[in-house]
Amino acid sequence: DLIAGGRKKNNSRKAPKSDNVYLLLLVKLYRFLARRTDSKFNKIVLKRLFMSRINRPPMSISRVSKFMAGKDGKIAVVVGTITDDVRFLDVPKLRICALRFTDSARARILRAGGECLTFDQLALQCPSGEGTVLLRGPKNAREAVRHFGAPGQSGSHVKPYIRSKGRKFERARGRRRSRGFKVKA
Image (cartoon, rainbow, N blue to C red):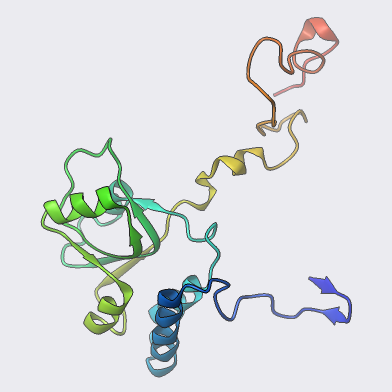
């Protein structure tokens, strides 16, 4: 936060870092909608369009259908990617609006009689976000998040970065009673 020349009062993005022309067109559209409609939905979508890829985690169709259970006729809105889930056997009829769909996810949604919308189509259908359910994927599901913190400290369940998981790797002091001590879980 502190940068030479004083503190930075607001660190939030005002525009996306990406130079994807289609994303920039969506930003233009949602900037207009956020300004001209008094709906909070458009402001949130605009803010999420600015986000980095880590802050726009993907969401699987199984997760979307779980959140859309009992919400018939509504459109699920995800500012991110919709991915397929091979463990999920019968896909219900879903109307989903997202930035991207993986090919297999798109095929399965359409086969189930559902609909894959883009954000410009959504803006035409419901400019104020009425009849939509805004969702986001699990941000902390990345494998890298497991390594955050201090491994080897007592009470921490942080995964250490090791070359390999086996008998010969990081199994000495701190890991076994017979080698000095064992860190309390």
